[in-house]
Image 1: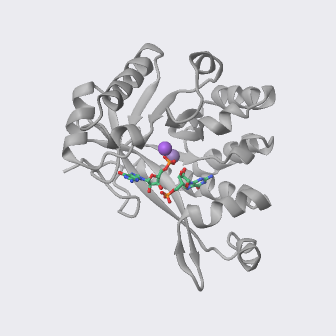
Image 2 (image 1 turned 180 degrees about the vertical axis):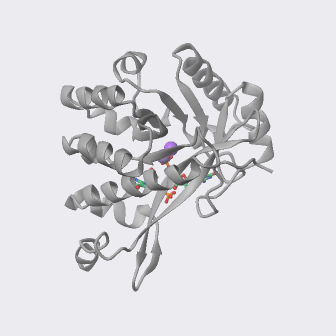
Length: 250
Ligand code: G
Ligand code: G
Ligand code: MN
Ligand code: NA
């Protein structure tokens, strides 16, 4: 309960903090994108990860001002990267609750224009479960976002109840292969087949694809051998590192 009272003040009191995790082009090692991950610098409890406050924020509706702050800050950061990497893009996670709200469009529009960022430089990451709950209104909102040029990634792909028909309905531009498959690449033939299949599927549907949770050189080799064009994970950079966009992976 006390945390709820604290949570009401996070945005006004400037206690939120964004970290960026690099997304690497596996062919060249270039970093042209990063995912924004929010943290709460709590005055007494220290740095809190999203798992410690986002569920509460979702329950109380306080996720909306938080997501709004995140979208604005992420767009501002991406605009600064564009000096180094003209095609730099940023990815932001969007809560299911936000997807159901009509003001998502206004938030996103004002964030890109305030930052002077091209809409195509912003990707919204949505989980399969958020999309599954989606009504016709949500679908329509996603189409509106696409018409504005905003990109849409399906996060943690493969862990929800996605079917092929659903991939036909959602105007996604990208699939993010869940890290549970990547982590089992060396030990589980089915995990390997899954990463391979999703990579092919993305190619056939003309979608971008990212392998998440790459932690070891072996996983990196496997993902690259499969032909997945991009990767993300501790091997390339932790979310707490410097924003590496515009640089090359060593
Ligand atoms: O960084 P960490 O591993 O603790 O993130 C845990 C989860 O929190 C991830 O699933 C991520 O999608 C989610 N998350 C991180 N930042 C944000 C954010 O700014 N908004 C929302 N809605 N979710 C976020
Ligand atoms: O659900 P989403 O994909 O948005 O979650 C991103 C989360 O995954 C972040 O909280 C980030 O800290 C975490 N993450 C990023 N890379 C790795 C990795 O290589 N291994 C593990 N275990 N977690 C990772
Ligand atoms: Mn994500
Ligand atoms: Na994910």
